[in-house]
Image: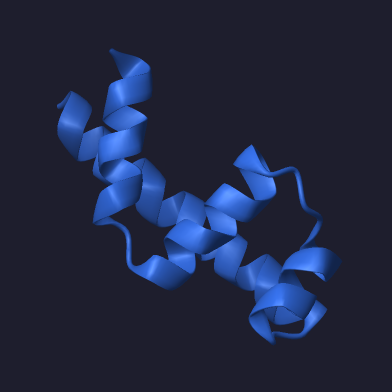
Length: 65
């Protein structure tokens, strides 16, 4: 059940945030690799990942009540 909730929440994220989480947490890429793939610098890739996690947490909090 929790995996399904996470997947649904991921789909609600804007694509750039979703990509940051998928590449880092599911594909195992580091921030440098993500930066190279997305055209961001390292700091921007880290910040996007941080914002993505915060947005995902908000969505999951709403889903779980």
